[in-house]
Structures are given as structure tokens and as C-alpha cells.
Amino acid sequence: MAKQVITVPDAVEGIRVDLWGVEFDVVPPTKSLAKKAERHVLAMVEAETNDELVDAIGGFFDLKLIPLDRRRTRPSTIIRRRWDDDKVSIPQLQALAERLRDAERPI
Image 1 (cartoon, helix red, strand yellow):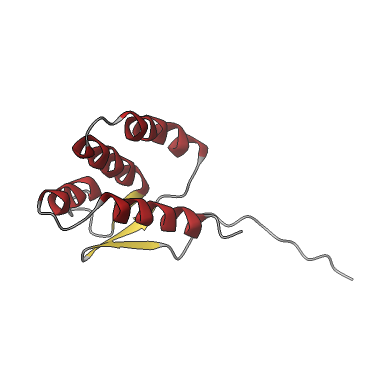
Image 2 (image 1 turned 90 degrees about the horizontal axis):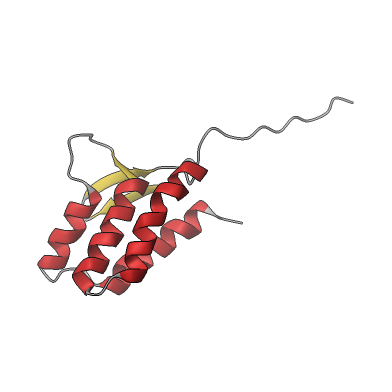
């Protein structure tokens, strides 16, 4: 009887994020990405104002999300505009980050 061979897929597939009509693919959570994200996570923890916190969250999403149309606006710009226009809250942004984390770690 032949053995079944299971291989590791090249990337996480099927995760797409829609930020108010602009779609992004998700960068897989690799070791190097985690290292880059450390400064944004630290900035979130050390944020003294809500504006600083929103900017740190936006910077994190800039690392994690790639626009489907490469000419599109970065996630941080979209998030900041929504924040400045009172159309998004910090709990909503935190919930988005949690949903993304859960989608990447389905186990």
C-alpha cells in the first residue's frame, strides 16, 4: 500500500480583507513579518493618545495587507481618514485585527 504524502502549502489562501470597498490580500504570518510587526505592537501599547493608537494599528495593517490593485491607498491612510471622519472606532479596528488573527490560525 502506497503512503500518502502531505506537503506544506506555499501560503495561506482564501483570506481577503475589505476596508470600506478596497480589497486586500493578507501577507502570511512569517517570522520576519512578526519581527517587523513588533514595533507597531509596541507603539500600540505605548500610545498616549487615541490618534497614536490608530496610527499604530494602521501601520500594522500596512504590513499585513497588500492591495489587490497595487496603485491603491495603503490601509493606514484609509483607516486614518475613517478615524478623522468619525466613521470607525478603536474597538472596530481591534475586532478587525482579532478576526484576521483568528482566520490565520484556524486551529
